[in-house]
Amino acid sequence: NAGVTQTPKFRVLKTGQSMTLLCAQDMNHEYMYWYRQDPGMGLRLIHYSVGEGTTAKGEVPDGYNVSRLKKQNFLLGLESAAPSQTSVYFCASRDRPTYEQYFGPGTRLTVT
Amino acid sequence: KQEVTQIPAALSVPEGENLVLNCSFTDSAIYNLQWFRQDPGKGLTSLLLIQSSQREQTSGRLNASLDKSSGRSTLYIAASQPGDSATYLCAVTRYSGGGADGLTFGKGTHLIIQP
Image 1: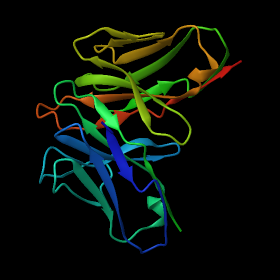
Image 2: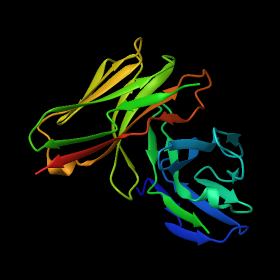
Image 3: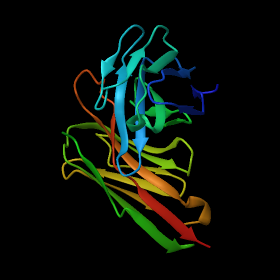
Image 4: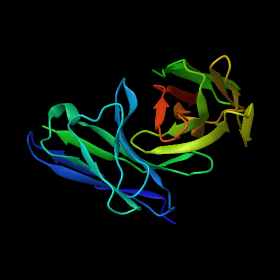
């Protein structure tokens, strides 16, 4: 039982490049989330999903897209990366009865 | 809009002391409150989860309390050890009926336990 995993762990992009971050969970959770963590700002919700095929915007969705084609996977895409998207990205999934969230190890992204 | 505040922002104490970390939130309509630990460069580890109907939860040397009506939670760490050094984050799940909201986080308390 790996819990929540994220790929890749680190990435450096140039402004304007695109990339996809992958989150996978093996706990059969319906709900999944993407957060970003920035110094002095704390963690903020980007997008979330309440089930396969559904997505919704969080607090800071601009510049990101997401997809949930399979229940166990939640993808975060950056179509045209900007330096303001330099951050650490965390994925989480949520246990339905308790609403407890479980986090992945994070992806550290630098956009130059 | 829900806001979560953690006080103090940083704390440095000698080993062995008991200590209290504080968390406050502006909207009392929460589903639960979670305390997390984050080590430098690492992910978040869930420490304690308190449902809105509960008053406290305990795990080993950790005890978390919740006063939903006043919008406050405390994390009590007994007999602190150098291995407790980390950033502690408080987060609330806003109750929205559909229950689909994510967590709103405080900015954390950076804790250093001196050997």
